[in-house]
Image (cartoon, rainbow, N blue to C red; front, side, top):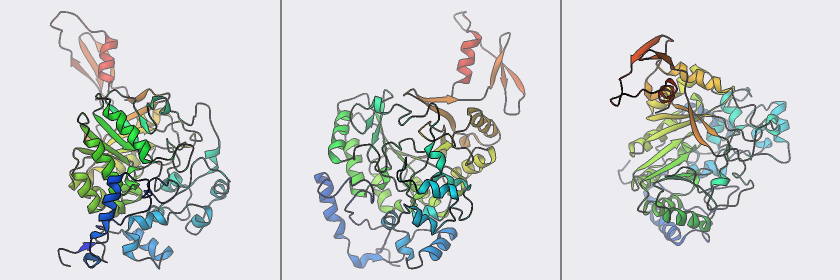
Length: 451
């Protein structure tokens, strides 16, 4: 192949909508003027320079699935993220062709209304076990009737994001950072989604350029904001042109130092991570990315390559994992996941206690289960592999770190500490130069605080 030839994954054709499906965010008539201009230039690439041979690695499971269920689809089409979005599985009829649905799954899918839409990319569907409804990754995307039962303490907006929203689509909870909800669309919907109230055609207002402008204006007039997290929905379902318009506008704000993107696209739609996307993101460093991983079954050749591309583009990657009952709530599963993440240059960052959204009780574990997993990781594997275990406090309290009891008290002037093996060690506490002493309670609070 000649060096000047581009593969199909390099080519970013203009799209009539930001995402295909529920959110008609960016028809050409709604796009900011700058985006329209860029879209006009997107067709400049000569068709003779586009190779029909894709360079994206395709795993054996994905290849077998395509051959079995989409035999008429070429490998180039399969590895095109627009094709994947257009052919998402979104109803019982489509799912029943791919999976042997349980009676409970059928009952849930047959309901006229759903707390959250069903949508699964063909790629991610290839990872689902055809016969076993208890398979971890299948449970995260195929609805069951438990979603329709509400337990005490559950709420549509358990984190109180709407209370901390100064303008639509923006959450300003912490002093120096904001959460910018740039779309209500995801390529694949997780059944435990914190924002199920607004994504996928829920009760939220459609995201549009006018709303983005109000959010950007708020950031511009709020100099305390130095960190902007793009989230949604999933920002990486936006086209390159629209995403660059948003990123460039925020990057040009003088007091904004750090940009972050929260996404599950590398896991459910890895074909989206094209060389063209990475080249665009590199222009706006420093950019960090938080990727939502759930289970080691997601560590496929495709996802590995997507993360390698991002890392090679100089984008630091962190994983945010939700602790889910029957999915990843044991030490060995979590250890396999975090080890696999480090191998593809993704730092396990947060382990979240599942938020109490409506219908989430079948996913939520006791807090002790999370502490058990941290105890099973700390000291038994590299420290880089140990995430912070946190609860995002209901009502808008923010992330609160939880740690096992490593500080156990004091003996005279020494601190008593328990290590990963359960053995107790003493540490000589230095005397204060002013002659005062700290209380055991104060020392315990310092020793138990997360870094």
